[in-house]
Length: 394
Image 1 (tube, rainbow, N blue to C red):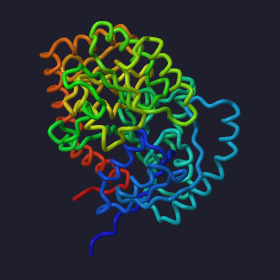
Image 2: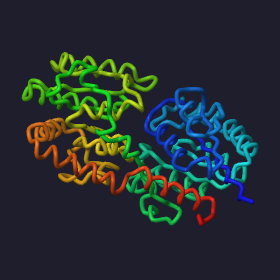
Image 3: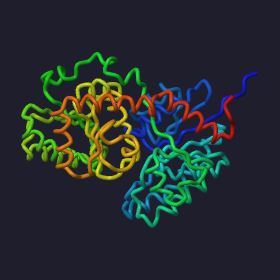
Image 4: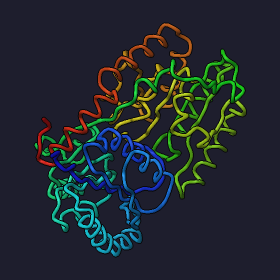
């Protein structure tokens, strides 16, 4: 008789679609429901729900609170008041699911760790953030994460170093990045012509930006650099794909106004979420260069490896996870975070030098093939979860 599948419950703080949300969907796909019985818990119905269900997870909706990276005093008070009811209700669901392992998909899901402890279940904490908390508080937060977890997974060494400092070598801490389907993320697999859809000339230089419009993603830096490049390359076009998360619509409006003030006019297109997850390969196939411009350390940079897989030359900020992904001058270029002049210089170098553009495209694709394939990620994910479950795979 076949052994019963381990029962996993994934605690996720969002019901939207962003980097960590898509990463959870891909993680569930990588694990596979043939070998694991998987449930997911989200705070409300939203666009992530059908994606989780399509990946094979049962989805439970449970109102949950999230500790924001820089909470106000009033928010902290509301969070504290709602934390215990959230932990209690989540622990009850964990028991009802007869979970063997609780997986928490964010550092700021504190209730996942506490609920696993209350329910008496093993806990795997996946840290996808570089904490913005006051540095003196990070050691205490790191100790709590370790105390509540059998295993802690970090997206990069930048994440583990920031949270755990001198304890980053603790044997409970593992590192796991992300992976892409190299068959899908390939120019040869793209049938759509996004340039034609957007009315862009086939030979026009196109520079792309793909991210949620959150201030730390550095869209203002991209716009400043784009304005400099536009003066030097009159036919260049700039595409911004992504929109502001709830509550940050005013920031998006300021950025649109800033682009107009810089004189970019119809040279820049704000696409919002016109191009969703399944459309991004086609969108990136239209780029001549992709820019990652975060002004705070990026924990990993999934969109970077997606662009590299598409053979799109990447320019990324020299901080956090991108420094572990991009080999400067080989698989992409790195620039100083927040330095619009340096970013513009890198854009011009790539746009004006076809040989450099080709070399970075080949180097980026090779880097992803070697380290960030879907198969590599699936093997790493299964090893991680089996380790947390205390079992070995035959």
